[in-house]
Length: 249
Image (cartoon, rainbow, N blue to C red):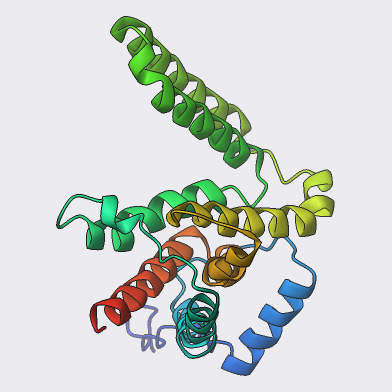
């Protein structure tokens, strides 16, 4: 007689197979649909292995269109109209151009322009606190050290308290409805701010920030579909590609 202890062990259940990554065609169709009608999505996150292939597709499109279409066009535009070249990079200390462009700018710009675009109240609250911090930074020299220190501590406490209180709140319906307008307004603002890179601007200067408008569109989708870390990584790699092209002459 076979006792329970003598019975053969059944094989362990097989692990569920990983979902295949979406094809390039699928992700490009979703990108086109998103740009025609931006909407709030649930980001996959880079912890999912199948998210890396779409990131590669989006990065290739981002950099490829910029290198092969947009940058040649604005080079011709700048040359034809005799527009000045950007001078913002020349104001940076020696040796800081590469780390600021490839590391600092992607982190800061994505946090400010796209980190909150999920529309969750906690993200919007942190954006408001970040804007207050920027205002404090611009007025720091006019404040007494004790006032500045107390203001920073109060702001940090408010940011933490607001995040803890709002972290379980969902995306407001009003934000979802307004998101298409919000998305494109932020994209245009992101591009327009980069006009500050030029010593002088006119209406003819507007096409010179087409790379930033294109980046805002691509990174906005990446942020919604894959998450903020993916948008930061894509931004950093796209900036690195631009820097490599500039250094190559």
